Image (cartoon, rainbow, N blue to C red; front, side):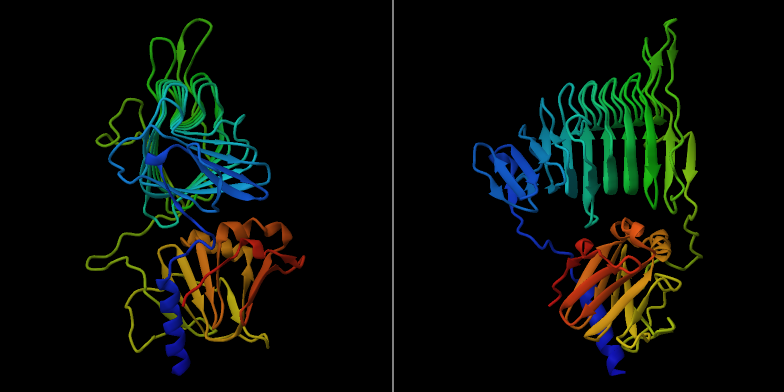
Length: 456
């Protein structure tokens, strides 16, 4: 009984902590000037206005008064083999340039906090990523589930993606409430006017993509194409192509921009079937060009493979607060109380074993998309198969926290699956304060995807 009470206390502690940044992070206020972030192999710096570069691995760019528009902008440069990490929090930018722009051969990660409004000028996307300017990946996330982005492009530019004649390649939206509206001739997400849009992935969040005149909701701008569009997980997506004009046809919901034939006949952009093979609880709703998306019904809907079942009268769909498990994964009551709900994760997706290789008593809890696993031992190994990690993702889990007596670590399931080339079996070992993460078959150290947490 003591062990069960202690483990229940540990799991409550783990689930109560947030996921703090492990590096220094400062607030940068746009009222004080435009902000430039530079990331290379030596680290990341921030420069504001005419000031000097300041080292900052996790800057938070915000405003003191977000109800007031600012013309100051955010520029993010990521050198080859480097990743820039930036949080934007309650910014309200309206500029004749690009409100937020990315450049360089490296990757850019943008975390959303609060409500962020980006309005750009002619030829510039609201959040601008041109393939010739930023050749890496742009990833938009919302780890704290409190973020919103409203990005509007100027004429000839996308809401998120390319400016004039710019292609919007390698864009991922992994969370948040995102509305992207293209200016005339631009896609909502993808190419600017006369620009293509491809390798666009939406894995989570509520996303609305509206094409400007002749532009696709997601994909190509005027007279150009969209391809390799993926929608997965529990992403909820609404798409609408831009309307036709006297010359060119309407844009597709997902696919190509409208165009005109040699005979001067307007032709609507062709729809491209997105990859929805991993769409589970999410859905895609298509709206006709010019329709009122707040009032009109979608013309068609694509549902994921695992839609939630409606609750019976008097029941709720609330998750459990915690659940104790034996090594056989049989439920028991913690602290003498039962939550009365079903367990958040079903099936044997992992094991917790001791130094003798035998299964250990452990506790689990799920809060939103975070699964916590805890044991009151100094040594424990969390292990499993990649195919089971995929199954966990289908059940809505994005992150795992593993806690033992003297160490707590966390990782994203998506980043573990990227290591699949090293084998199917993975193991995370806590030995006192020491932590090791290994792809077993090829004995590859994959500890780089871990974040250490401080829970006391």
